Length: 376
Ligand code: SF4
Image (cartoon, rainbow, N blue to C red):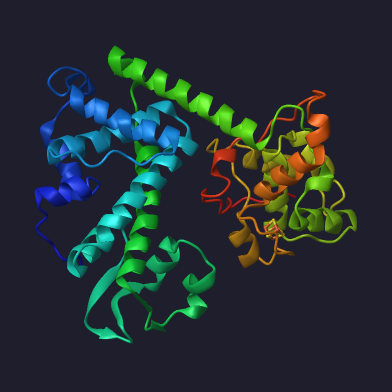
């Protein structure tokens, strides 16, 4: 059962996502038009500052001194993200905002920390007396859902688990809260139903400006990773991707996780669905109709429209698909580095450019855990 805790206005400044904060927003019964006009204009400006911080990858502004303004600004920032409509920007804001909240949580007393975790759907409890030196226990399902990575000391096999509870330190509990908040923000933005028709002009112009800034930022980041003049090259593929291609060429039955890793990687380096299908044609169980459906799903052309990014190296390791220690965090990072090295002398000659990955800005910090559908 969730323990009720009296949250102070200071808490609402730091945690504007808790249910009490959302209740407060609802009870005010304000419209976007109200917020866009004086004297509430500060709310919109603060919300825009949050989104701009995400665009620039900078620290979010510190919480407002006015808890009501902060709570409203957080809610409006989510609306702005929905209106911009780019999941990678939402993820960016989720990352920088959650990082800040993680720092606040690490400084809280345990009961408040556990309360905020419960608001984020993390089942946790404070231990009356420390167990094996740990002050907090997190339910194993919550732990698995919010663990920052399934590697190193976060791996369940390296944890003390008793009767379905995982013992964690205070800092680890705060870190789990950080991860849960990222997902919470993405989910909230996803759930917003936006009526663009009734959006005030001032807010509409603001959204257009933010979209343009984000578009320019994406372009700049892509060019940094994949400058003009670089064409896709199989030689630059990381060892894990080469191994999957080799297995396919050898007619081996490649597991679904490997097929997803390969398809999402190839799409991210700019290959078309048809080009990706050509690579899969060698699979012994190749079925063009099914494979096309699945590759199009990964490319974001079907279903929810979400384009999937390839697995990070940590995920590849967990799935047993990592075959070397490359010193990178993401197979795409390996690829773009190798390609730049390989093509550096010829890049200036301006051969046809193969554009970079749609989500290159997230090479290191993205949450690429893959979809439920796999190609082939
Ligand atoms: S370290 Fe990363 S890029 Fe290298 S083989 Fe493993 S998963 Fe692939």
